Image 1: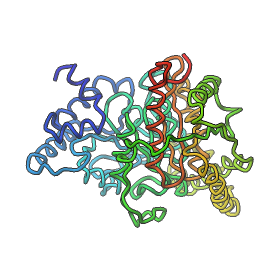
Image 2: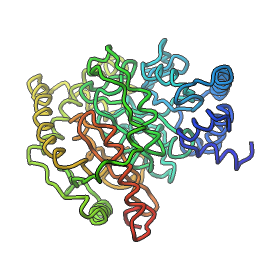
Image 3: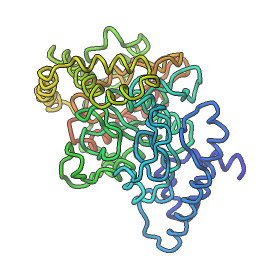
Image 4: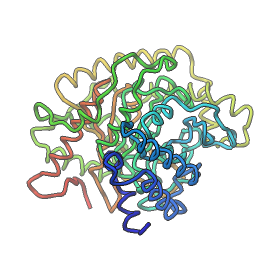
Length: 459
């Protein structure tokens, strides 16, 4: 395959690739070969993949092409490769959860979401790198634009692989900021849906009231497309509710009946944690939106949200990871071990209060959504920080994860050649309209009369 063809195929969005496969313009084998060629070229630098078997990936692609030849009625992701975060069980690849304590772990069954992807025709290309047990301690992945910078975490490999054109879409998870933040750092779209929209059966549990499956893509259509394939009700995940299947992709591409108005919410961490480039970029963005954006201050009660999220998160980390620390203390990082120990001191009263406060705060947030179509707020403190000792700060994500609301990273900003994103937040289970508003935002800025190509920010 010629380099030009590899580049063309590996840069296709999932939606475009699926359409071309359906029309017979390309085959799944061609697409997977291009992705594997890109991985061979780049992954020594980016290190986004934990488990990859090129021969097996191509065998899946050949089988997909054979099925299509026999029956053109195929699924929405037929023949399209997908990356899977390595805390999500796969029956044909190891799932080691980013820790030597689980080295060699081979699940016997797929996670529910992986089965759903296979039913949609997707090729499971491989397993992407996660941080240690999907918490904060970094793993090996580097930023695809500058390997001296972090790609974010904990869904490090998923975000980096999509950003570097190794795979068109990938799946991750978020308990604090593990989808929205790496999407922001790597310059891709990331969707953290409403808590409970996608099944977590077969996924490593960290904090069930917070754990959320998310997706990465290089277009809003792509994140809607893959998320639509994952939202079937699963009674084994008790946080899910029976509901009709979503139409995220369809609605995301529609024009809104009226132009949306956004609430620019700086959120409690703004003064201390937002970098100067972020403050400047959001000031410019709000000005560019004009009558479509108002600055809104959340009531002071929301200041407690970050503390409440930390209580739940820390206590549940102790519950689920404490046995791992007890069994294999030598392979757990110092930072995670300290968090586990701290979590054991959280009282049942504080934990249950944190759950109760969440619903009270969400009731207050609904008042904002009665007046505004979505909240506009930073996806990260700024661009990906230099250094590999941390994965960056999830401080601008934790409140929204705690409240269980849908969030999407829109890659609109840039500083010194490094991307960072705008985060849009919507009401629970209003994920489709949130994507539609995000699509309106990108088109509105791209059509701005000053001819700026859709990028708001500083050089």
